[in-house]
Length: 205
Image (cartoon, rainbow, N blue to C red; front, side, top):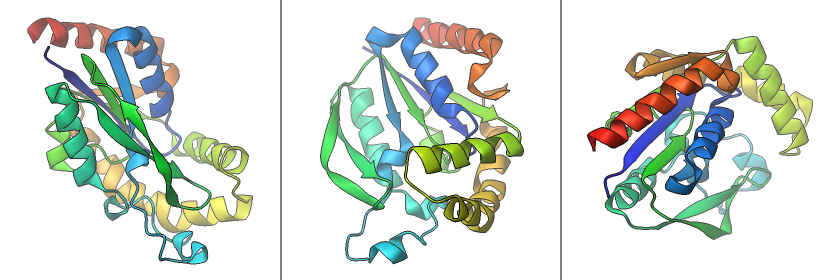
């Protein structure tokens, strides 16, 4: 069975996870979904206070080679063990999640289009384009409510690393996308277009 790999990129809080989930729900039985955030590097030898200061929006924060290896295995039809990440302690958890290969492989993350090797593996490249003020508000809500961060730490991180990294490693690479989706993950028309593209790719393969 030939596989179609769909990459969904965009800045923090852009709605890429929402869009990825909606695409997954449309093709449920024949789709699998993984997040690039699962591939954050992990170094328990570094104290927590220092790990919290790391730049998690830079390409060097990710073990991209492992992600590429896993995508290759999934494309061959093999299952992979995807690492799980603890955002409060900035470490990988001990357990992994077994992900089976399906006809449609969906991967979402902020830097999918920045790495040319990874980008070239994607059959359909999608960039979710959302206004910066909306993205920062969503980031604050997520990090405070779901990841136990303080408001000050979220704002400081956004100003010191998230915004400059977005301008350097995310925004410039949207030109590599096949489809640019405005208005985040709730654009119903864009979702219909993406579904048509996926079905066309499946027929091609």
